[in-house]
Image (cartoon, rainbow, N blue to C red; front, side):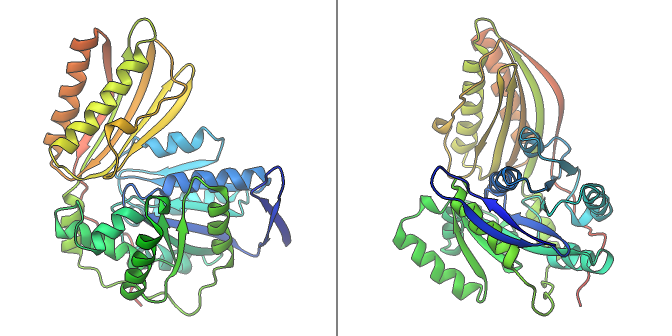
Length: 380
């Protein structure tokens, strides 16, 4: 069946993108923490929904409270979660979710792997080809252009070489390599980065992208549509001891809290709590994989995100006005779990004393990711 996909509608121009459906496509979307995968997926899904196309999303995290899932659900996009481990270590759950979402015949499923995961070819793409041959996989790997530039030039904020090892292996398995947040680099920096990437990773299809712009997202969707696998993907040579060590350098903290304050002061308190967490982590020079906050009240909900290039001054809360605000915190930081937990808990306790508010703690967990043990690993 063939039809036109109408995307990027504006007052003046409609872009028509041909989309031929023979089998279901799965956009396996990887890349390091904070590279902008979720923002891009949400933007792409909204564009497809506006065109009356069926789309679905599978999120993934080492924890079981995911800001990204809550963020995507608010756009009425069908979402499933693979939690408590990466796709490769929870392959049966991933397969179940693909089958469940497939009942509604989506033309495209986005599967966003956790940002500390690599080896997607051997543990996901090849097993899917073997066990679900009707699924056509396209691997998009996102990279924060500014962070990638610092890593390739040897000035990365990530201290441990094993973390940089994961980052570079992720780039090596891309069908489509997305240089995201490209607006943060000058034209000269973009040209220099392109040269380094083409030298380090020859033959990759590279897209320059700002995922807040519809025309850039449309370019990504078109690249997914047009991608055809020629030959067989080559499984990466992965040293799992280095890989496991790299994942263990990152502390994972998930915490749900409710803030009750009078006179709609809860919004003010939320802003100060978020800014204090970001600033304290940066003051201690701990590298941020990502910090995500899903803030919700009766007035609405917002997602606030920070990476290694963000500061506490970047906070923008536009719609949250209430005496009661709920927050889900996802923090992935290059430090130990106890250290990260202490930072967050001390800031919350200080906010209670300083602002006279009441902070009620809900579910929480803090940990290092376990050693990666994939369900399948197909090397040939």
